Image (cartoon, one colour):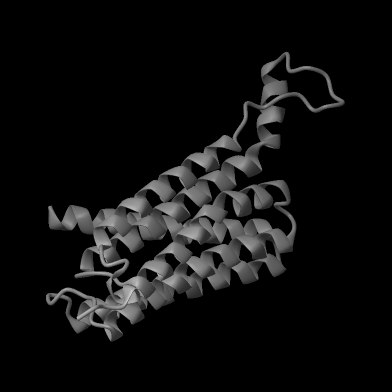
Length: 213
């Protein structure tokens, strides 16, 4: 019997993972393109001493800080997405489009990073950056829910694995929200808190690796 095209398209989780690796690699590379060797201020004297260079480095500190934060962000979400894809027995059309939407938001990260670096004391710039993170987490959560309801997961995926996956996404999104709300006091406080959350996620993963070795 003939099948509907929508029922046979987008079945390969492996091809989706390969595309995701490419998009993440490009987004991470674009982040570093906003980092430039510090120059003298447009109306100031040229850099001639170590003190002049230090002053110039301080001017580019927001770009360095947001680059570090965004690289961690993309690393965390790449790991989260790859973990999900490893648990998928297969994909389907809707799942593929969910992850294409996720990759769309990944590709926007260099823009929201540059915006925050340029306007690091502006609450709106931090809100745009936080919204970028929220959309990434939300799409990963929807992806897992959809996979559970449509039986796309491998047989070895237990209820405990599903609960842990969803709980981790929710917990970190709550922490990111707390970080965003700190901008009511200081955008720098928000950024420091978000970086600490990210470092906790990265170090927790490394600790689990050591324990399993």
